Structures are given as C-alpha cells and as structure tokens.
Image (cartoon, rainbow, N blue to C red; front, side, top):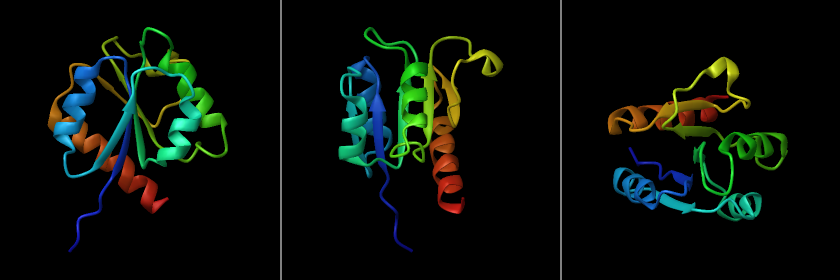
Length: 124
C-alpha cells in the first residue's frame, strides 16, 4: 500500500503555525503564505488538496478569503479548514468552510480533520 502525498496550503500570518504544520505533515508537500496578497493565484499555482486558513490575519479576514475561494469555480472544490483562536459560532461565521478547528489545536485532532476532509473529497 503506497502512501498518498498530500498537498497542504497554509494561509496564516503566524509563522509558527507554518512551522508546526510542516512538522506534523513532514511527509507531505506543504506550502503557505503569511499575507493574503494574490491568494487565488498562489492557490492555483500550488494546486493544493486542502487549505488551512486562519480567520484573523493582520491584512485580511479568513472568512472573506474563504468566501472568495468558494465562489471561484477554479478553487471551489478545494476543502478549506479554518483555524481560529476565537470561539467559533458556526451559525454566525459569515462563510461556509468545509470545517473549523480552534487554536490551540490538538495535533491528532488536526490530522483527523485533514484526513477526514481529504477522504470526503476523494469519495465525493
């Protein structure tokens, strides 16, 4: 049985989150940005299997970025997992991500959510 390499794209202005995700998914291809400039172009160039995106960034709101990606036919199929230190009210979030996880996150929980979203994408 071969291991499928995942392509994970991180959008977070906290570089330590990039470092943590790189360590967690060291066998996978991980790329990211700390600024939301040209996000769609960066996502299309990398063609990720999943996007991990912070809600609160200095230059952008992850909810707005999520909506832009989900409204774009070229990126709408990519699962978006929102990361947030905020208490998340899914009914009043302002966007429709594929899932959310609160910071600080448990590593096993993050891996579980990523694998679940990728499995769901491959089935659907």
